[in-house]
Image (cartoon, rainbow, N blue to C red; front, top):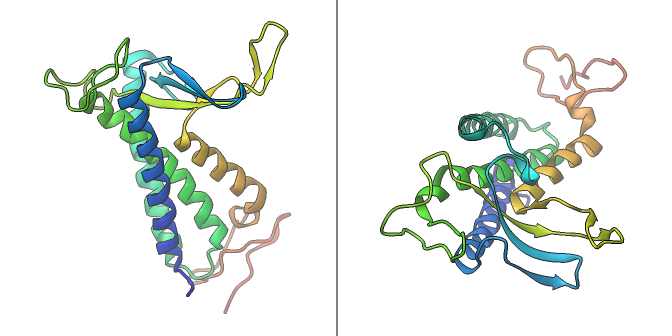
Length: 217
């Protein structure tokens, strides 16, 4: 049985969110900040860190930057969500486009949940394992929560043992966003290269190199 584009997108988004949040909650409630354990040798490590800013540990403008970033993420997810709904109603939308956008939306939403609610739901993790719904309240206000990161792949190191590749610590939501973006850039460029289509045309596939969209009349 062929799954509709809308259902496929919902399944992808739901699966990524469940896995992402399950891993983050386990890390937050079982590990102290900056603790780690090896998964495969010394090249795949679970290392608990918290990111106050953007993906892969980047930061942006202190508390106000954090607030603006959280609001931007919410707006972005809403826009992508509306776009996905619109595309799901068009039969000519490539399923690969739906997959890529669904991964991006799910990843962005996963990190938004951390930013919006983790500061309210959890205690801090400095020198202790965080409590869920602590009596004295969480460690931050609404929109100011920190994103939980844990995936660390120091595959290549220098002579001193410092990581050269891959240095950033990230999470499953970051992985979904990156995978979705690269998938769209590598395999779905033709769809986004569509420049012009006549009103009422349901064909979304466009020709590259300046060619106009082909009518499906």
